[in-house]
Length: 358
Image (cartoon, rainbow, N blue to C red; front, side, top):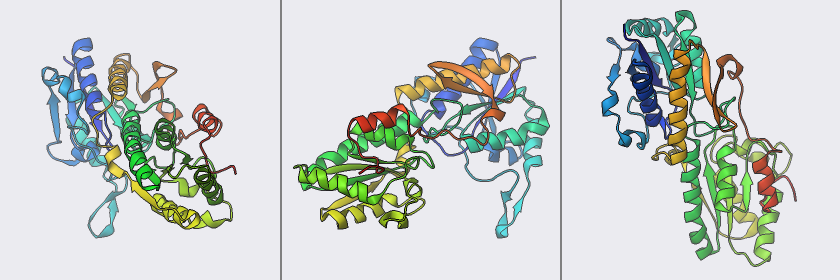
């Protein structure tokens, strides 16, 4: 009998998801003669009766699928199976209903594409079923432990860098300080990569404690030296990084740090400052070539892991190779920017202010 494997996308969307789905279906078909069933809307699709699922036809997966952003299966970042939101503010454990829906599909294995939170939830949900499960890491934040790169990160950096490239000439035309706030949750991967690639003067990330006075002084020195504009990249959670009792201690802890910083820099330097918050445009772009290649490599390997009898595993990109590792080794862990790592050292070598030094 032909084996059937399922695939779903869970958590926030990002570029490269369609490329993963395509790679899984093609490898299952060409490499093993298996059928692939796509589950719609992440775990929410498992609550519908019949389950919201579609057979994925390999012949329909042309190159156009790989280069499209989003996920044609849909996704969800709400509805914890173990504390599912109900009317009236109540929550209910609906994990059993989801497992019943999963069993109705008669699958031989499941591949889940998600970030650290989604993979942890899927692992917990599937444990009682005994179904073989392999996770594929995706997130623009690049904060999944165990992998050098997560699908979607490259595209988010490309979008943010293009934004910085566009802000530079308008800032120079008006002698303005241009502040760009990028996403990343509690990690500064997008900010540090964007800042270096886009030629920023200041980069602020949550992994490095910073002082507003140091940032202000750096910008003032630039202006005193004849540069009338400055580019500042700040991670959305960088407001968490300042623990020192200085004027930055009222920085917002989540989001809004870009606007806050622009106002403070304007007051301190007497120069005009403008903030741009990119938000979800970092998620919705067509994937870069790097993200498409990563998606293809991880998707194909995930199928091969199932074929080899693997279960409770995650595929990853490490030292330019595709590997797989136990999911238990990454659950509850986080991959953040190394304050002593290569990108931070590069930023310092280029004279970029990280806010921790005068």
